Amino acid sequence: MLSLLFVSAAAFALASPLPASFSDNQIDLVKARLAESASHSWEIGTRATALLELEGPSLFVYSQGSTPPPKIYASTGGDVFKIVDDVLAKRAAGNCLPFFCDGSAGDPASIGIPDLIRNWTHPSPTSNSSSSTAAIDQLHYLIDIVPRLPDGAISHRSPPQPVQLWSDFLSMAPPFIAYYGALHNNKSLLLEAYNQIKTYRYHLTVDDDSGLLQHIVLGKSGSDPGHWATGNGWAASGMLRVLRIIQSSAFAEDLLDEQADIISWASSLLNTVWQYQQPDGSLLNYIDLSPRNTFPDASGTALLAASTFRLATILPGSVDTGAAERARKWIGANIDKDGWLTNVVNPLNWHKPGSHSPEGQAFVLMLAAAYRDFSLV
Image 1: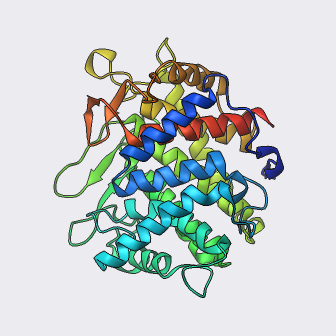
Image 2 (image 1 turned 180 degrees about the vertical axis):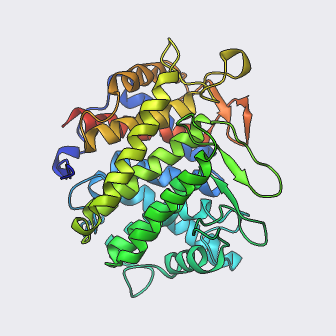
């Protein structure tokens, strides 16, 4: 029998101390820089998700009783709900079917869970149902319009672009699909989210025995068969949110095999990742390359450490938290006086170092929240 461990939402009060590597002032500065810099769809969605994890955990999927979320609307969700409302206003003005029209099929869905939580809990929902029209349209777009492979894998790119699979997709679309299914007692959507993880994992590892996920496969151009740290972090993070949503759903007992698969896939991936940890605690931007051919990346390291603490909270002993702790300390040492995470990859050019990374800023918040929750178990 799988461990369906839940951590009490009451334990996640905002007064809970943050990890020693991140002072309250650091976190405030990191949040401020994130607010200033997030502009692309996945950055906005990831910002909202990170704020929910850190400041509104009782609303988010990792807390017991959070699916469906409690019917509260308070300061814990205020910033997140403002982000959602801004997205909805711009979407309405742009006459767009998904939350954003930016060439990606997967990235716009990253705001989907915050939107669903906002509409479920807000005293003035954006429609008369428990899901906003935007969420319904986004789901319809993913399920019915975006092209797929014969095994059901949904393309990360919008039509008419050919099907292309990115590891990033696993953090963007499957959690939204699963959460929609859990809120509406729709088992087929939970299975759809599971199948996206299963098929993506197959295509991103086929003919590759490294135990890591390739970044981009298929499509006519732009493939990236390397094992990008952030891409592996995106995948692990998405898997764990889908796992928790299934565990919290009305179909948890029906989907024990699917839960076991996701735990196996996530633990295998994360334990493989840490085999490549550098002596200073970092992971390289392309995890298994020689340090001469790549560089340490704090962004991907932060997300993979956060995912490790999340999995260890769900299933203690399943993953190497010692490695994640070394990474956490290295991340803390790489936040500058202004709150920027340094030594990051350029999020728009994955092979090059960058100066600032909005997603990296969000990953610091996710790491702080994940370690806090892990420390309370």
